[in-house]
Amino acid sequence: MEKIIYYLIYIMVKRALLIGINYIDANSQYRLNGCINDAINVENLLIDAYNYDINNIKLLRDDIYYWDDNLYPSTKNITRELNNILEISNDDDEIWIHYSGHGFYSTDNNSDETDKKDELIVSVNEKGHLNILLDDELHKIFSKYNKNTNIFMVFDCCNSGTIADLKYTYRLKKNDTKTINDDAFKIDNEYVIEKNTENSSSQLKNIHLLSGSRDDQYSYDAFNRKSQLPMGAMTSSLLHIIRKNKHEMNLFNLHKSICLDLISKGFVDQTPCLSMSNENPSFYLSKVNNDVGKTRINFKIQYNNNKKMYMNLF
Image (cartoon, rainbow, N blue to C red):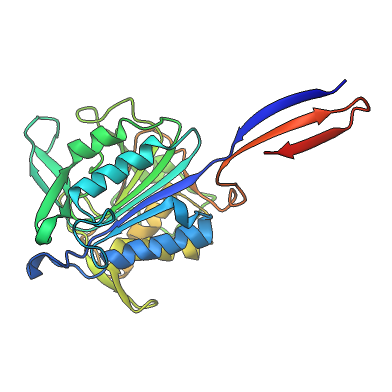
């Protein structure tokens, strides 16, 4: 007598939403040079080093798409794609969100910010008109996702320190400029942990944010000598540090290394920030899982009378 057992295996899927806005259609005073290159270079990193399927990456940019295209970085498209990538993700999936563009702040109208300011990102709409997405709106979007999905976000823009309103912010102690030593690294010794109780939600889980600067700072355009292309200073350092460490890093060492790299290149008044929804991170930059598949796999295990086993994928 045959015994057949049916299984459904879900193999972790990696998805990314990358947004690079140079404000090509906007007034010349608002134009940036390196943001689209940031998004393209991050896409290359995800595909080459972390096994992201190009079909699971959405790249919004304003140089090759017109304002009514779905991949133009308008407010409507950014909001839709953020909702989409969060809604379709399942337990243990990995999401990478990268935004390079303008950031700013406005007056806080609902009294949920300690500094009385709402941070925001700047989208571009029809005929180059600028629009905004407040951190409150981003926070609402992030609150709807699967809490067992791992999310890593990079916002390389001005005034972005608390752009996602996450519960825990990790700040390097001012006098800590030692060389990174992964084995000896101590969070308690090198970081001050600030708990945000006013505008964060305890329901958010497994979200990790690396932002380009503090809420009161600029994030600068720079020129990457290796690629000979303009890029955001923080994104350029991010990619350099990841490759230097062979694509294996914890978030604390990544953050600290980027801070030190920016200082060494003269960006002394740009301090990237690290914040999380959890007190301890659940995300680690690693190539360990690069053999994972991209889809659901159905299979059955069939036993015959001689107790031999056969596996059939279908």
